[in-house]
Length: 149
Image 1 (spheres, one colour):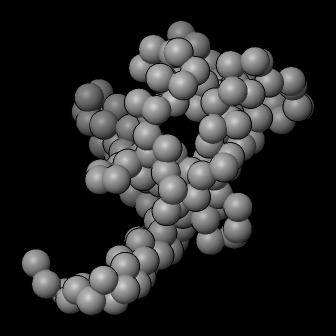
Image 2 (cartoon, rainbow, N blue to C red; image 1 turned 135 degrees about the horizontal axis):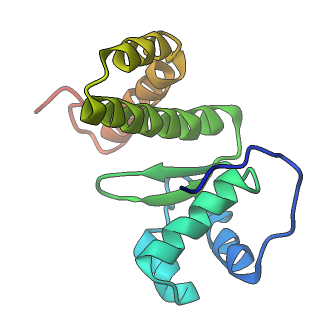
């Protein structure tokens, strides 16, 4: 099994990592780059593109956010709120993966510990508030009712 290394010693980026990062670092939450565009531009498979983004985050500490849904894509987090939102997304995904793994093993003791982790998830609450606020701003700018279904 592959183990994650949590050493934070900087190491040089590969040429592929540099190419992918060059595409993402120019993007904001309003100018996302979809994974399909990254794959086409650099000539990567889906699996390799995801692995490179993962490496940029984990190995090189690049604050890369991802939005699911429509529109979807990656963006570079440049201010504290962006970084908090990007981190909240990763935290939420990680917690969901750990919960799924615990359920697969039917381990209630792990689920209880994960419940304790969720108490520390103020970052998730903050990200949701940011998302909701951004949605209201977009609706106001386009003259839509943010509370309409």
